Amino acid sequence: MSQSPAVLPKPKCGEPYLLTPGPLTTSIEVKKAMLRDWGSWDGDFRAMTADLRHGLVDLLGTGCEAYDCVPIQGSGTFAVEAMLASFTPKDKKTLILSNGAYGKRAAETMAYLGRPTEVLDKGDYLPPRGPEVAALLQADPDISHVLIVHCETSSGILNPLTEISDVVAAEGRALLIDSMSAFGAIPVEPSSLKFEALVSSANKCIEGVPGFGFVIAEKTTLEAAEGNSHSLSLDVHAQWAHMEKTGQWRFTPPTHVVAAFLEALRAHKTEGGIAARGARYAANRDVMVSGMRSLGFETLLDAEWLSPIIVTFFCPADPAFSFPKFYDLMKERGFILYPGKLTVVESFRVGCIGQMDEQVMRAVVAAANDVLKEMGVTSAAPPAEALKERARLAA
Ligand SMILES: *Cc1c(COP(=O)(O)O)cnc(C)c1O
Image (tube, rainbow, N blue to C red):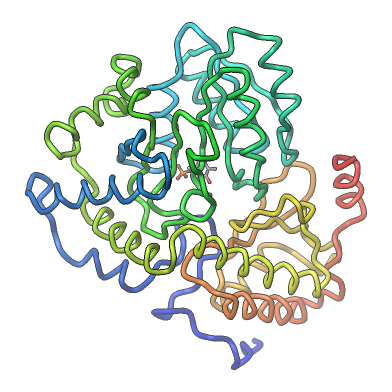
């Protein structure tokens, strides 16, 4: 057994750091906020729900008055499904811009809903670009809605949201955004983007715990959505109308999760809002990526497309490397990694979000260096095929 280097800062509360895109490492204050019970019907909790909704809408900045926030119980996928079911029409097409697992899931959701769908499939990690989307919209006037995944968490690519929003608006169509893993760290502002609705969840960049997602939509869109959902529990209009009328959730709310989320929102504001949160994550990424590169690791994506949320690395070609072993030894040192989701080559992911700073990221790199030595890996360079594939697709 090798010893961890003494310089590693101990994870808070003695738990490992979650280098994963949610659930993620939360603050002790967020955890403590869950140490009491709330009556879902009680005025105190209704006030908490109102604070949560206002706090989230405020994050849109200038122009936020046109929008409202509707929390939805469940994980993020429930909220994506609620948004698609409530806002996409049954007699017009929705174009899904897919470049990874979450785009695929959105298309699959549309298939469950039985709604007319087109998919622009860019494979595992190429971004959808404005001109190709404009061409698709011009060629098919039946497309009324477009869904983009803001940060495609499966590869870590930050998709060109403004570029896509511009062409969708120019073609007079409506934009829906899966900003699940980006909202709270990367601006989504009606002053510079035209969009009908976005969706995110409690356990990503706001740094709460899992238990609900939320849809932020134009009030006109919410009004028009009456009767459009196939589902009772995922009907965004019904949840919104009920909350507006009674201040309550329609069905049992995740009370402790809401309390934790309000604490997380307070901390987000204190830190300096979206700009400061995004800057901390970007610094985490920069320190971690340059450190991993110095060990010989290569990122899947070119620098231009690396999100400050999560980064995909190729597994080293060295036969002494095995990801399960690497994972276990990193966990022993206090870091939980995330397996990769690529189909062509082996990869793993390192998240940059949660209660972590540059110092923690330096410790991650030091631990990785230590683990490679323990495994007897002499080079962390990826297989030649991986780099060839990357170059071919970038061309
Ligand atoms: C996390 C995430 C989701 C939702 O996933 P859940 O596991 O249901 O929370 C959807 N889209 C993206 C881009 C995500 O990162």
